[in-house]
Amino acid sequence: MSNTILEIKNLRTEFLMPNKRHLVAVRDSSLHVDAGEIVGIVGESGCGKSITAYSVLRIVPEPGRITAGEILFRGEDLLGKGPEELREIRGKEITLICQDPLSSLNPVYDIFWHFNEIFTAHGVQKSHAEKIEQIVGLLGTVGIVQPERKLHQYPHQFSGGMRQRVVIAMAMLLQPKLIIADEPTTALDVTTQRAIFDLLGGLRDKLGISMIVISHDLYLIAEQCDRMYVMYGGEIMESGRASDVFNHPLHPYSAGLMDSIPSLSFHQEHLNGIKGEFSSVFEENPKGCCFAGRCDRVGEECLLTRPEMREIEEGRFVRCLKA
Amino acid sequence: MIRYIVRRLFYGLITIWIISVVIFSIIHMLPGDPIQLMFGKTPNPERIAIVRSFYGLDKPVISQYGLWLANILRGNFGVSIVSGQLVTELVLPRISSTLLLTFAGLLFSICIAFPSGIAAAVHHNTWKDLSLTSISLILISIPEFWIGIVYMMVFSVWLGILPTSGYVSISESLVGFARIVFLPALTVASVQAAQTTRMVRTNILEIMRLDYITLMRSFGVKEKRLLNVHVFKNVLIPVLTQIGMQAGALMGGVIIIERVFTYPGLGLLMMRALQDRDYPVLQACIMVFALVYVVFNLIVDILYCVINPKIRY
Image 1 (cartoon, rainbow over the protein chains, first blue to last red):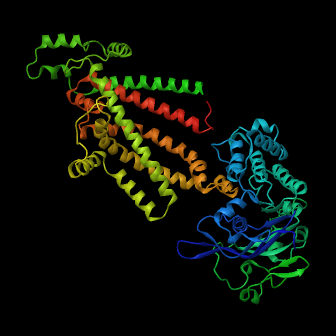
Image 2 (image 1 turned 90 degrees about the horizontal axis):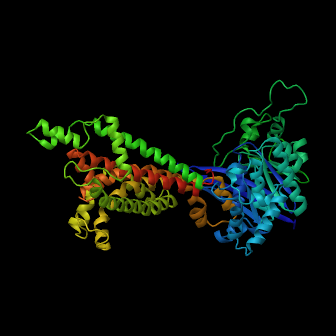
Image 3 (image 1 turned 180 degrees about the vertical axis):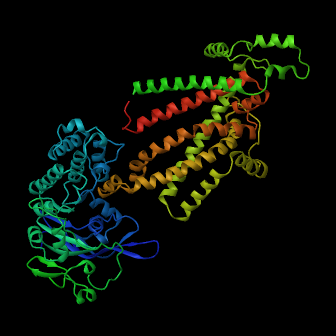
């Protein structure tokens, strides 16, 4: 596949806790993003979605470490790069959109300053007027009305949805190849969620930027993404075309996840869920499947053998012995 | 901006007026009669009555206050009961020496606190951080006058490089004045700096973790710039508030430290006036301290709204 933008191979990200224990947040995970593709990652809180995203940008917070695997961006391994090379890739080639727009802009600086910082960080030589023109154009693209008036306003003068649009505009400033959106809509209300997703989809269509979208919202992921990955306990459990995974989940966890979506179409006595609780302490070398404790299809072999990713159909992978 | 400053100024004036009432009342509630003290062991009732009416102390309290306030507004703080000198003559020359000490202390405290707070935050959870935070904890815990005596021991007695006391006016010799003011200012600064260091450290660590820093890091902004620009301006807001609140402690410290170093400032004058029950001098001293406090907080308020765009004028 020559048009693969990003390929993560067997990534392992661990946190070395003060008690000398290793907490494995991402284990043996592989995923790839093709040019112009939107890839979704879904899973419950704490399953390693965000850490996967941070690993790509190499900004995993302390005491996190990437201990194994490869992250190939346009064929080059990001794990082998020095801090300065990485810094040049961040913001220019790969950009991030954070989870909570209310806290993703610096409250003591105005909007123009935020964009200018990105220009400065990457040594962009442009006149003030040129910069203003480009930023105003971008803010218009992401749907901010009267952008030239908003340029010198401060973040607290914007609503959550508007701030997320500003962040998206910042992420697009230097025309990156890949945008990683870490739960871009979680903190927003329903109508704004839709608008932001439409905006991201539109950007892909117009500019051909590839995206990784991390979300809890299965409907939006299924609707907007080309392919999706389901994560559980730091591992990727299932992957495939978004509509396939959504409509015909193969892994019992994916099935449970899709089944947990509340429905309005018929009278529901109670909300379906996945029984048991997610264990947040990740073992270093687990025996058996990490979902076995909550799985309703669990068999003896599931407790003894760790399942590997298997290709069931063309482009359809699942990490389950029973599927 | 102008409206904001005018409003702050107005609040400042009201504060000063309330302080004037408080000063006036407290001093009149203190036990001890200065006129009787003046005559010592051989009181002469007739002459006491004359002196009492000379100072206006026979009038009702309210009209005494009215008279006092009217005089103050004209810059007349009266005459010292002890020496008979004009209060303004006694107080004015000392204002500058106390202010210089206070600002030197403040300057030292800022110059110590920011670098050490930043160093502690950058090297957090290492021996550097641990030693800086331990030193600051020790400095917070021991009284200022004791620190002053220790500095005197080290710099004056053992090393013999700085004088323990005395005074050289700044107009006479800048170097001489600096040598005099160094130890008292360092003493005052020590406790302040210790508190501010901890404040700077905690705030940097807290803000470093926030989303807007992570986001800018993900856009390729250099770590150094993240700390010096992105984080720093946000740290200034709480730290400035802290420094503003320290103003009272700073001047309280100055009063004690002047005594330790026999530095001829307002504090020393005030202590003596308090012992002698020299009301006019005492009132003038307290008024000056109150005024400095109000002006100090006014400056903090103005700086605050320059830094923080969320404050509306």
